[in-house]
Length: 379
Image (cartoon, rainbow, N blue to C red):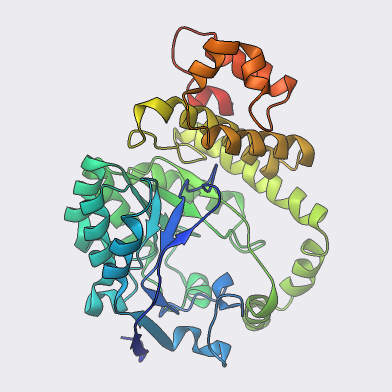
C-alpha cells in the first residue's frame, strides 16, 4: 500500500511483563505486539527513537516492517503460565491485512480467558469485531482510538501522512460502541500550538461523545532523541516560528508540566460537560472475587496518583498514593479480612500504607456498601 517492505522472522519470546499494572492509564499488566516499524509513519511518534527503532537508518521506521511470524504460538506458550490480567495486544496497520497476526493473538487471548486493551488508529480492527465481542463476554475488551483532531485537513496530513482518516476512526468507535463495547479516545499526543486550541479540544471531546465513546484520555508530546529531531524537521517545513516556542516549552520540566496541566484541566471540564470520563475505569470483573475489592481500591489510589501527576501537585504525595496502590494491588488476601482481623493496625502493616492513607482506606472499608464510585473519588 505504501511501498513498504515486509521482513518475516521468528521470535524466541514475545510477552512483556511489567512489574506493576499501568495504573491510572490503560491498566495493562502485559503487552505483546506482532510487528516492528509502522507503515503510517506519524511524524511525532516516540517509537522513532533509537530506544525502540531497530534500524541502522532511522528513516526505515515506516519503510520496513518486521513481521514476527510465530507470535500466536509464542503468546500461547508464555501467557498460559501467567495469572489472568489485562494485556495490550495487536497492531492493525496495513500489514495486518496480509498476515493477520493480531487476529491470531486475539484467538489466544480468547482461549485463555484474558482481558484485552487495544489502542488503534485503524478501522481495520473492525475486521476482528467477532473475536473482540467474545473476549468482552468472557473477560473484558476495550478499544481506544488514537485521535489528535476532528478535522481531515492538510495540517493533520503533515503529521500523520499515511494514517487512516479521523472520520474513519470515529466511525469505527461508533461501531464498537453500538455493540456495547468499551471504547473512547486516546488523545495522545496533544501537539502544542497546533491542536491545543479550545475549539479543537472541545470538538474531540464532543465527537467522542457523539460516537459512543465513554472516555477521553489525554497526554502530552514526548520529545527526545531522534523522535525530537524528526519532529523538529517537520515543524521546520510546517511553521518555523513554532520551534522557538517548543524550545521554551521543553526547556524545563516545570514549564512543560504547567502547560499540560492547563490543557488537562480544560479537557477534564469538557469531559464533565459532555458526560464522558477523563480516565478509563479500571476493569475488575475478571479477577477472583477474593481480590476484586483490592483491585477496585488500588484503582482509586492509582487514579488519585495520576491526577496529582497531571496537576503537577506534590511529587511526594503522588508517589505515596502510587506506592500504596501497588501494595494493595499485589495483596494476596482480601483487604477486608485484613481490616476485620486487626483493624487500622492491620492496614498499617501493609507496605507503603502510612497513617493518613490508612485513615482514608479505613473510611472506605467502614462503609456497609462497596467502595465509593470512581466518579466520586476523582471529582
